[in-house]
Image (cartoon, one colour):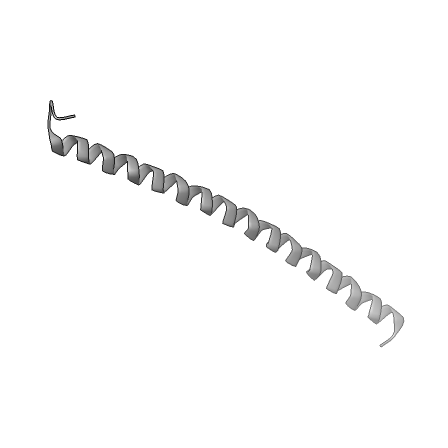
Length: 62
């Protein structure tokens, strides 16, 4: 390859590498956000279950 062709290829590879780094960063952020959502949903499920148990007991049995 000539020098200019090599520079072109290296430039494209650097660009691709930068984009891959951005995708990795985005995926890490998404994993963190999904984990937070899972924890929040588990909390909501627990609260709903506790509420249903309380309602099932009826008034005065709390």
